[in-house]
Length: 392
Image (tube, rainbow, N blue to C red):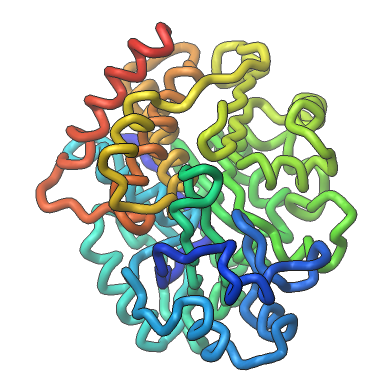
């Protein structure tokens, strides 16, 4: 049995689709200076800072932006739980145990989240409701942004995630084959001691995977300095795989272009990384320690998914990155089950590409299956087509 344990961001997503980021009513809420609390496509801001920036109550802001429409969907969200759910959906019935550790608030959203998570295939190994608000994000989605590729804006409340601390993670978390820290920038106590936690996981001989989220807390504190990932730069030396998007890669590395960000990560002691960039090519690299050695290169998105979305675009881009991570994890698990002496990062990234792309066919990050194995069957056909496309 392969055990995957994840900790980090789990929240309620309140999703508004078909928001026009170029609308006259939207423009007053756009950021003027980095870290000022205003909105920017593809980025996250804390609700309190956004209200301070706008200088009017949030209810009024939301009314103007959405034109009083109701949410299109309320769903499980978060860069930790969504990849784990995707992994569990794809490995259902197989020898893989997917466990989640986190905190929610003892409010209505917390009760909804706890009940919904119990219906998912993920094991709630240590998920507790504590005093305070449940972490939540208002997700504003513009499907026409970036020439029809779509983009989102996130307005986040950390809430009870502040109460999830490093000492909450006991030995059973680290006694796993794979340990995943997802979106810890929205779980401050975990994020600020990530170096220590990653080192502990490595000491237990676990594979360590980190996937990131826009770190508005550090962006606000030091908008012109690179973001910290843990208490020291040693974090990178204890990461087997980092999955991040283009903007987050630039801010973590303190650089202004993807090539320089890649150079920073290669020199940091990191073992492997994947950098996504929406509908653009994905950067991949491995030093040969966990995954077979792979020189820096790019791989494309799925042409089949891209073409199908032109015909049938009913979803949004929320959760694309999270499901990308889940697809990568699925491939790692499958390769471990086959007892591969060297893991293949290109193969893992192929599953990431089709998993992330498939997310655009529905609203929200989590796909609600009607039957077990449904999601795997749909994604597998795209995987087969993608492998023909790339030829590896």
